Length: 273
Image (tube, rainbow, N blue to C red):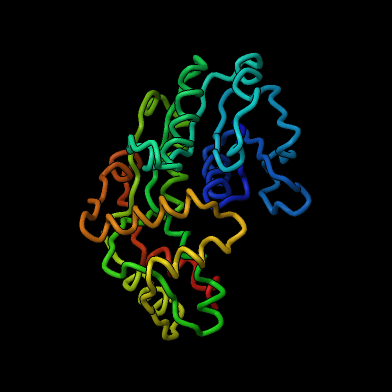
């Protein structure tokens, strides 16, 4: 039995499908099972109940436990769980103590490592699905407004993250590994906006704003914190002068090339229409 936390999230939903297709037993956790819309083959349970009976492996989405793992790891070992696969972050490569993302993910990684269970830490960079934050703007025919238009990133499709996580849960190939996961290309936000326009068949514009304007806009979002906003803006600024290279890990692990942002935009065209 594999327990998937955050089962209705961008990665979790695809992971549930991957595991069921492979013939695994899956218990999918969500805040509201009645609205989860998960496959009938999955056992669906409430996150706050955290049923661990019969579970041998866990997919751990830190977003569900951002305020701390509490006693989850102790309970997991007591129930005989052998393996934990963490949806960590490429930010965990940073040793900057002011990088809130790095500090949080590293703390979770270290706690899992100290638990004595087998572990894999998948470390994706920027998610292609972050572009869904532009959804309402594009639907309203307004320009996408972001700072640092020359900054480059290597956005990864959530399906590729799920495929790597499934490999880590179903085989022993990635025990003790920390693969850095990216898409296959280094692109800018204006290029991403253009690809969304091509996928939807409608013109989508990009408009540069200052970092100060971006900071104010981000702080108005309910899930953003001041420290996190500053980290994200610093990372964006740095990538304008020091763009990261794509990682080969998705292809090495799964056997297929990482999906491009253009493919992601085509998969999600309806979200912007």
